[in-house]
Length: 305
Image (cartoon, rainbow, N blue to C red):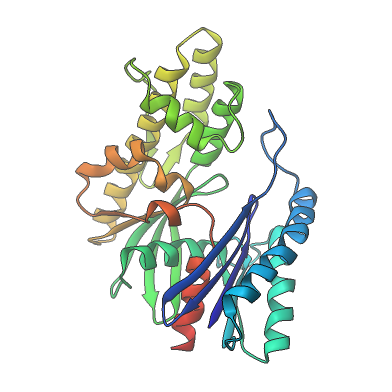
């Protein structure tokens, strides 16, 4: 059995995998106060420490006496020097303890690699040639050139967003009185709206996307009385249009034939619908778009194999 662990900014997650088959996928969302736009790192670490013991009990039950052959854990946001975030220390400490007790290997990976691996696992494939990826979440908006390896990825950022698309969504959602994280509620508002999408101009240069300008324009529109439903539609259309332009540029620039879209925003039905005309686009399964440890466990499985 391979254990995967991830303690991101808003989710404590543990997965158990055997020969690439998912045995259990355990997740607990961190609690964010109403009308708040996030958690301080110290608050998030404290909640992870509270969440881990009951998740370990569930993991013990799922193991059923089977041996742990390795533990993979996300220890930093991205696979680059200097990438650091305190929340990952909680999972790293727990994973090291499990590995020591089980006398098995401990494999540190990055949160970003976990997202890409979760997308690949959910699609039932492992790429054999370089591809373009988009990592879109509450804290990240990057276009990536990815070279797959036997048990991981060599990643080069070739484009970025000045404001993460998830932050764009959350800031407007909170301003509308929606719970944080606001993605699901804002998506529901957009899907059920009768109005046309409020126009927000996409600002893209090469692989770089700007959501700060559209966010400011959306805030002004909300204050001026524009329908929240029309505005919600406009936000997702803007994200989809920006992403489509950036991905099309990267696919042509790096001569790739696949664009893998991962991260929480990748699960949004409106963004996916907008990108449906980009034939190279592949999406992580909806259940594996948001923060999870399935991809981390899959990376561990591939290292064992």
